[in-house]
Image 1 (tube, protein in one colour):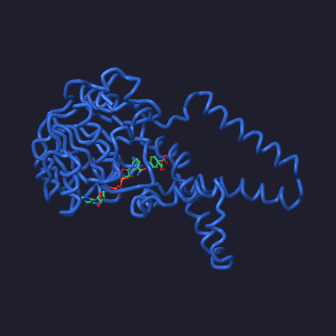
Image 2: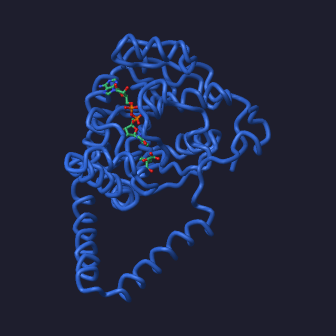
Length: 312
Ligand SMILES: NC(=O)c1ccc[n+]([C@@H]2O[C@H](COP(=O)([O-])OP(=O)(O)OC[C@H]3O[C@@H](n4cnc5c(N)ncnc54)[C@H](O)[C@@H]3O)[C@@H](O)[C@H]2O)c1
Ligand SMILES: O=C(O)C(=O)C[C@]1(C(=O)O)C=C[C@@H](O)C=C1
């Protein structure tokens, strides 16, 4: 991992949409001095005031265009379905040579919506930090959210020096950066993030139906596995609605495969096929152990303490 930067990587960064991801980026920029100034745009006065109060923005604006004007890096950090309209709004004020990126959980749909508005001479480098929580809004962010997490960039036709700069920016927040193409990104994330979220939403929905029959016992005695589902299912409804509407094909593909496996396990339970169940669970346990052995079960444990200059 690259040590956090001691000198600004960008002069002026504009954060458009001040929720969990943008506020975490703002806190990280402030903590490690990654931008000389941070401008923010949020639709409500309450959110703009929170950004100033918490100190992750230096200036806040009522319109996205005002915030983006003169910025070297513009970060679109709104739900995926709103990215295109914002790109259209800020396009006329973008500075030549600036970089526009986004943090959306889906990439092909964002590129289709945003790229047509990006003027010549401005670099559009879509991105996706694989880091988050079930919380949302300007008060939910924290500087170490991206530490020891992957950030996927889709460089397309962007200038290599602009890509290198954006990579250095994320690395200075403690992230690991990988480049990927958009279709591949959407398929991988359908497996690792989107479908698991849908399953969690469904399981909590099932428990909610059952709660009406068993009074409050389902919630009261919820075991650890179910509690993990409820954490995931507390994630922002607008964000996840947009994820499924825009990554439709890949999530439907993975859901189809999921239901086939589920029916197979359902049949094994019905037939009392213990060997089949045991073999299946042995295989899945090996996958989990493989993830841990590969050191990929990271949750930002020590970033800021073990890295020189992080100034925790
Ligand atoms: N939450 C996660 O775990 C996570 C992780 C990685 C990427 N993402 C992606 O990051 C983006 C932001 O997610 P978040 O978790 O920060 O959500 P959030 O709900 O915390 O923040 C999004 C903010 O955008 C604002 N917003 C919506 N439309 C807007 C518009 N037209 N103009 C200005 N502001 C607008 C909302 O009011 C909200 O404050 C989404 O595209 C999401 O897919 C989320
Ligand atoms: O940790 C969580 O709460 C998350 O769900 C984060 C998570 C995920 O891992 O699926 C959710 C959506 C993203 O686009 C990236 C990260």
